[in-house]
Length: 142
Image (cartoon, rainbow, N blue to C red):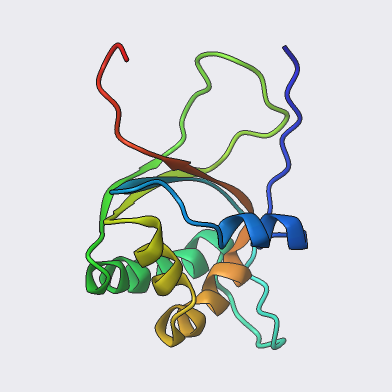
């Protein structure tokens, strides 16, 4: 099976945004983030910086980790991608981060909050693209 993959920094279609605003699953969700960083950070306002994309994203990551807790969530895992053991991709992601939220509502509230908007400039400056994969808990073998 061949699967096309497109990293994005923000949703690129009205349909995707509409889908994101629909009621989600009941209960907790975990968001799996597959992150690809720019070599050098590029800020939309044109500011000069010596930060790498990863360093700019880390500013966002530290701030958003605190913000997530204000909405009842937690960052459960962050790790560097070191090897692709199975499958094929043209360009491997740099980092995986997983955050858990009480529900999709809290994720949406957090990601549209003024605090998130303020931090997001560093996210956009550092990311070449990412995949966000919403997951829900299941029982093993189910």
